[in-house]
Structure formats: C-alpha cells, structure tokens
Length: 387
Image (cartoon, rainbow, N blue to C red; front, side, top):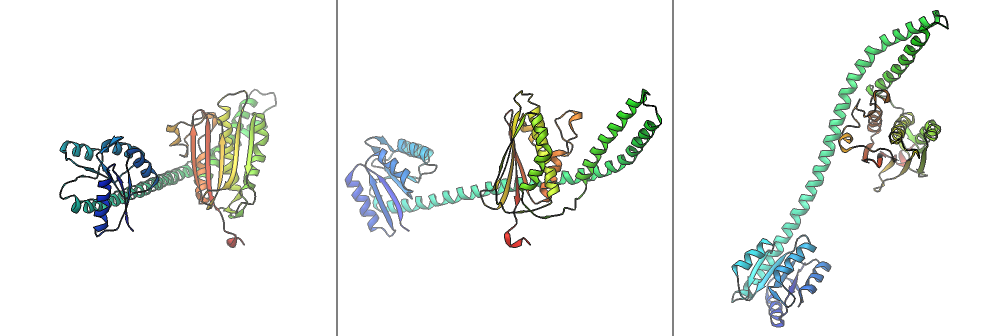
C-alpha cells in the first residue's frame, strides 16, 4: 500500500520539488497538494492521510495554527512542518503541540524528506496501534470489573443464604408453637372476652412472620427448577393478573409492549412469575412513595436484544427513583429503604437469585426523582433444541 501524503504549500516550485523527490525515492508515495490552510484542513477531515506536510508560512495561517486546528478536529495528526529558515524556538513549540517532525529546506532536504515521511508514517501506525490496544484493554478491564462485581454479589448471596437457612429453621418451630397456643386460647375464650383482640393480633403477626420465613427459606434454598421452553410473555401476563386490580386501586397505569413470536426461553414459569411480581410490587411502592394524586405508570416490554442473542424484559416506572449510593446495594439480601412494616429487603435479592439461576443477567438504571428501569436478559432456546 502506498503512503498517502498531503502537502500544504502555496509555492508551486516547492510542490514540484517534493513531487520529484518522492518519485525518485525508493518508497511508494501518493502526494496530494493544496495551497491554503483551510483547504488542507478540509482535505484532512475527508481523507485519512498517512502523513501531513505543511509549510510553516501560508497565506491564510501558519503551521502552528493549522496543527492546533487539526488536533481539535482529529484526535491524532501525523504532522510534519517544512520551513525555509530553521528556528529552534518554533521547532520546540511545534513539538509541544504534537508535531511529528520539523524539516528545513536546505541542502539535505532531498535526501531527508523521504526518510522523515517514512519515520512519521511508522510512528503514526504505532500511535494508532497503541490506541487500539488501550481501548481493548479498557473494554477488557470493564468486563473484568463487571465479572468481579457479579462474583462478589454471588458470594454475598451464598453466605447470606446459609445464614438465612439456619435462622429460618430455628425460628419456625417456636413460631408454630406461639401460633398454636394463641389459637387454642382463642377457642377457649368467650367471644366478648377482651383478650380475644390481643390473641387475634398474635395470630395475625405469627402469620406475617410465617410468610417472612417462607420468603427467607425460598431465598436460602437451592431451588430445583422445573425448566422447560416457555414463552416469556406467559409468566409476565400471569404476574399482571395478580396485581392488575391492585394497581388500578393505586391509580397506576400498566402499559404493555409484549412482542409476539419471540423465541422461547428455558425457564421455570412459576419462578419467573415470582420475579416479575416482585419487580411490579417494587415499582408500585416506588410510585406510591411519591404521594402523587395522579398516580403513575409502569411499563413492561419484551423484545429481542440488539445482538439477536437473548430476550430482553424491561420494567420501567415513574416512581421516586433510586439514589446512586443505594443502587450499589439493592440486590443485597435484607437491604431495604422501606419502613420496618414495608418489608425486609428480600424482594430484589430473590429476583437476582431467580435471574441468575436462569443464566440471565439483570441491570438497573435510575434517576431521582424520575423513576427506575430494570432490564433482564434471558438466553433463548434455539428451535432445533426444542423437543
């Protein structure tokens, strides 16, 4: 491949001289030339030149001004300045601004010009190669960081799961006893006995604790999912069915964008329904917390991702949003920003566990006070693997 050179020079004799020098040289060069700085900048923006040769003094600018503008428009410019009279001060300033070389039109000009072009060309290739390597390294680092965060999260989940399993087991037996004794006492009391209300409250709170323990046990255990190819829209519709009436009471509009004929995903429909219910409940609570009279909106969308490799499920709400500091912890077990009566912080941890067990990936974006978006990607099943 020839080396593409742009010469910005208003003196025709000097242009002809450069052409002759490059024609006689051993290398393969293609030389374009313009007489004005503006025209040269236009050419640089339109064509990827390997080397730019620029006379120091031009009718509409000097080489330093051309270099600064070229650097502003293009991240890296293989720029060589040619001048009739050398100046150490100018040369230093040009190098500071990023010029590759500085060449004086003296007796050595004819022999040096091709060598300077070749050297600048090689340097430019090195710069481009280094930049690509840095970009690749940056991408690799981000992927490594993301993987590390996922591993840390998985470790947290495993540790908390073991702790939760032990606690729920120890609590379950005394709780069953408390509820049983309270129910037995209720049966022995007259209906007008003042203790009836207190004992009923004990039974009610025992039922609530039983529900919490069941959630903890679900979080802690390694679920044996009944996996089969399913339409992702089905568990979403089932989750809607449970909460649709409740959302209307809360003055929350539910908007659905469920794509048809999507590839199937390998999943346990009951577990996915549980995950989607948790996300809808979270969105409902976020909207309720704004205390807006007009309520709010939750949108749910299913689609193929841009790479055509997975199914995307996106839950969006226009609730209170989540702060940057809180976002770091939302999938941690028992982390919650709600009041003690609002929950114990297992909802999103359970969602994370279910998505992870389905070989999926969940990400969240949020901005206070504009709302939150959860995006879940599930790998889909190829048609030939469906039996």
